Length: 422
Image (cartoon, rainbow, N blue to C red):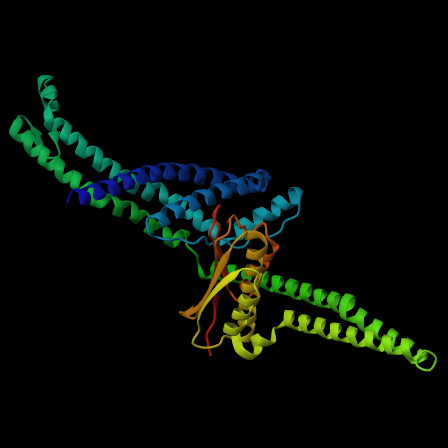
């Protein structure tokens, strides 16, 4: 019972502190609304072009803080802003940015929210503080302060109760306890009510969600094209510098052997033998190149066998656990295979790990891959081109890569790819 009361009091106290933030936010919103309206009024004079972007940034900052507060209260609100556009430098860019901000419906919804929040946020934020202060005031006067007001000739009323003596003071204390209980139970819900009020105005609309989706698809398409171009250049380079050079050398040796066949048969046999060895090496290079494009074991036996083959070839001990009731589409399998390959390569090269594990499963139409190692940790996708490449590959299929790598380890890389299994 005591722990429940303590928890309730802590939650109410936290909500009251957040209510103070809401009051401060309501005051800031009022200031921003007035400044924004004045800035837009001076647009024709040119001064608004300089002031409007700053005001809008202030509004968006305040709105984002409100979204974060709502998220802590269990009411998640996603930002609805349209993707930013590239603008020219100088005053022309200022004008372009101003036009883009004013053309975004989220800007006007932020302004409407800020205007309404000056009342709603102020009232709902102040209400828990008022209830708590009212309860404390009642306890203070019921405990004896009423005597000071009586001695000074002032009649003190607490709500509808005139405090004239100890019996009425006890009744006032009882009413104060009711006010304190009301504060404890209602404060979290009052503050949460402000979050529910904010969500329709600060949340995403169908247009903003569609615009963000289009921007995401454009980015992933660009990344896919870049990755494809880079892969084609790598294949071209490998063929030109490796296999093609060997084939040219084989042709030259065979040509020399042809000319020396009658005059120096021993030299011709030696050249033919060297050409045969070079052809074997060229064939091995071609097989490695093909394996880098799409491993035969992946095409023939699926992701399970291909990942187990990777584990056997790894430079450290790798434990594999796979639970797949079917096969994914070939592009998904290829992305998953190369992602695991890159992750195990990173573990071998950079993690200083002794062992790693790979778990692959499928649930709720999501292929989930977890690669864990016992290395030193500290991995960061922003500093590694390999990890960024995995992220780009995954984003092409609306997939994600989550990386948890504290200093000292362990490192856990979680890859999720939406897909259905055949």
